Amino acid sequence: MAHIVGVFEGDFDAWKERFDSDPLGRAQVAKAHTVLRGIDNPNEIFIRIDFESAEDAKSFQDKVRNSDVLQDIDVKIPPTAVEVADQVNY
Image 1 (tube, rainbow, N blue to C red):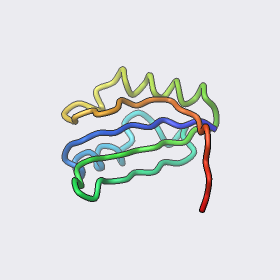
Image 2: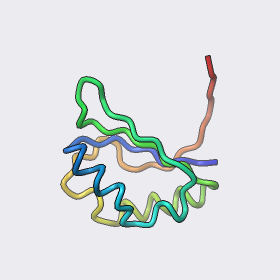
Image 3: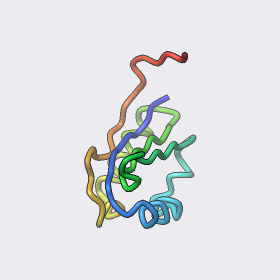
Image 4: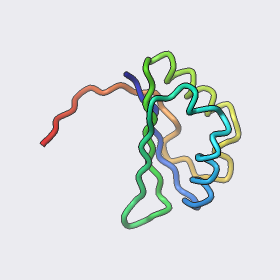
């Protein structure tokens, strides 16, 4: 499994509405997603989208980066394809 992660800042409600409208067809290729908000700054947005393969994650990363879906939002960390290197549950 591979993931795309990103960190953004902007109007959370406007961003979430755009995200939920799924303009790039995320739901057709992704397996799941997690959206988090900053506690001190609720307009700070952290996202992880899960994909079956690294190829799917990289392909969708490129699709997002080459589109205008992040227009009007401050991109702190651009959508980046990653894989889990270590995970421990407590």
